[in-house]
Image (tube, rainbow, N blue to C red; front, side, top):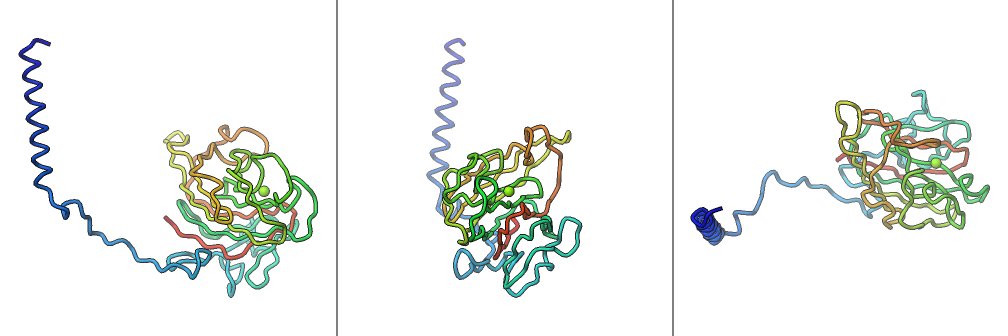
Length: 252
Ligand code: MG
């Protein structure tokens, strides 16, 4: 660069900085205020456990389990249903929402059996499958060790929870889940992977964690990626009488 070119560029830069400063000097607060569209108004529940006004109640007192849930074959669910509490009946199989979801905020309350039976993966095992494919583990890990990426709060066989915040058997626990569905490339691979944030009993256990692929009991998740659309929520029957109640969802 010769001296003349250098001086020309330097002059141009000085002028543009001076112009920008002048522009900024002319700004008033209202110029950066955005008023429309107005933010939707939502009435919160009585406590953060209770559904806000824009939530869909998937499981609650005064409803029937069959309103929102079926078994895997689309028939009436075979789980025990009493006062808004659904309990796994061994061998009845999973229960599944009739609705399908993409991005959501989900509140779930679950309880492992009061009577402690079994150990490791055999104690109070169930699970919540997001979009039918990605399992957030439900397990009684109060004084019960198992593999870290298979315990309660884990994205099963993928990511361990940040902490073990399980309360004892027979106690109700909460999951508050924020899920962002994957987006796909034409060839069926992820454009963006699914992401999950989970608070268990109000404590962060998954922080915007990326899923590697659909949950696999045996094998590598990345090998099984299949392009998919919206999906149901599935609650697992892992032969243990785990209970669920007060499930609500907000579509995002
Ligand atoms: Mg499970």
